[in-house]
Amino acid sequence: MSYEASLAKLPSPLKELVTNARSDTGKTDADKAEVIGWIDKVAVGDAAKAENFQDLDAFLTPRTYVVSNYFTAADVALYGALHPTLSQLQPSQYYATPAITRYFDYIQLKPSVLSAARALSPAFSLVTFDLDSAPKIERKAELPKKKEKPPKPTDQQPQGTENAENARDTEVSKEGATVSSKEQKPPKEKKEKKEKNKDTGAATQAEGSKKKGGAAPANKPAEDDGEPVPSMIDMRVGHIVDVKKHPDADSLYIEQIDLGEETGPRTVVSGLVNYIPIEQMRDKYLVAICNLKPANMRGVKSFAMVLAATSKDGKEGGIELIQPPPGAKPGDRVYFEGPEYENAQPLSQLNPKKKIFETIQPGFTTLETKEAAWINPDTKSVHRIRTKDGVCVAPTFVGASLS
Image (cartoon, rainbow, N blue to C red; front, side):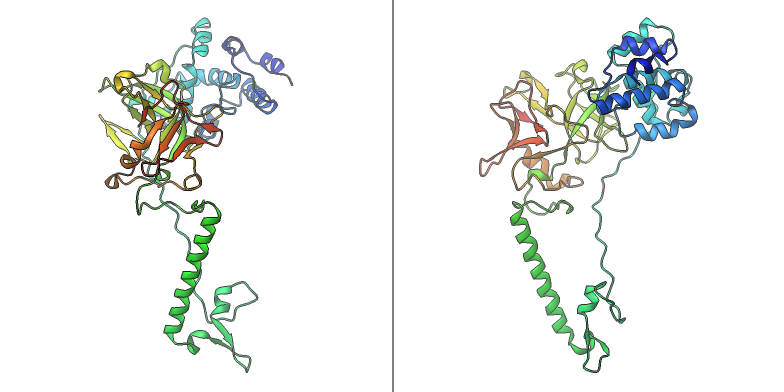
């Protein structure tokens, strides 16, 4: 079925809303099919049924848009279908589905949607939400998963190769009886054997690391022992889905930033009011530092920090947000080039007492190409900051400091 045929099924004035918003109908064949599928759901009334809100809320929690990572006609159709219900809800009711409320508010404030809705007033009048009083979602740093210890050897005879550890700890006597090796060897010999195995394992692991260019195994969490290194910093692509001025601080923005997490956008407080207009903050893709300890900023807890470039002439020269490469999606990993950093795992949370970020930050800069990078202060080697899709850049600054 074609997009036009699906659109024709929508009732008025919803059909006019979707038409007048002039949004994308899909960049790929797969996306086009998804857009049509969502419009068909809206047309038959399935997409916005109140009894399906919990499922829809779970679906929208990690998403900014319903199709792929960009705004489409499917979003306009879903917004229009949700409008009659959400416009009648009390705070306690729309707090119960925070992802739907966040999504609806974001879509209704899109300039093209605002314009199309005004032309059809009062059918799609602006819905105001008391988000300041919404219950806060407490996010805790994710702890590294502990490896399960293998089961202790038993006195039972091992079968086949199911338990190689037990097989090593048992020996068969000349008479054919299975005897525990513990009974035949003194404790000291076993201890020496364990230490030897431990040394052999460490050597094997070190050899494996050398073959991979010194990168840590992907499933091994980083440790904050030793000197701070840039790969300890957890950087990801973020997308600002909502931004407003802090009610109690003239210089602060409060942003909701989608980082591709199932828990939904993080609240982030940034001191950028005097440097970047709010219009340039809306719908912005950026780089966020995600493993700083949450900080209370004038009564609002901030769960990340945006990476910004300050002119080499100081703040008077301006501040710009570092931009990820085209095609980057919320949650994409941002890392430092170089075999010792590219595959290393960041810390789950930076320890403020160890000043890890403060030690690394002075090496952050933008190159002559405006590319963001970290310069090793000892070796002067340059490590560009990038995603799998390309290098992150500052819009105009050369030689800027990043923080």
